[in-house]
Length: 77
Image (cartoon, rainbow, N blue to C red; front, side, top):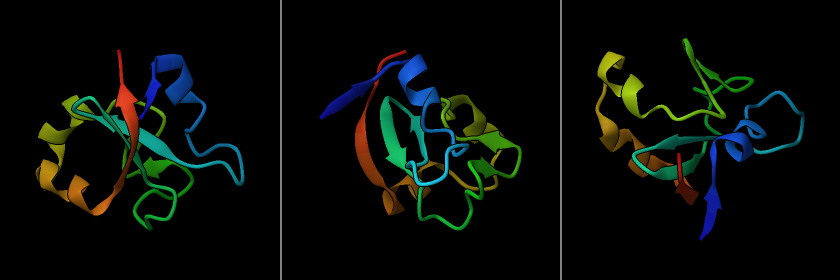
C-alpha cells in the first residue's frame, strides 16, 4: 500500500482538476474524490490534503463514516 507523508498528501487537496482528493485519518489515507461532501477539496471547514484525525472531535459524526470511503494508502506524519 502506498505511503504518504505530509508533503505528498498536500498534492491531493482538490485544487487540481482531474487529480484525486485525499485526506488522512488515523494513519490511513482515504479517497474522497467522488464524495459529494468534499466539494473542491473542502468538507465544511476541513480541507483535503491534510490529516483530519484531530478534527473528528468537531464533527457531528464519529470515525465510522470512513468505512464508506476507499483506503488508498498509509499516512506517516
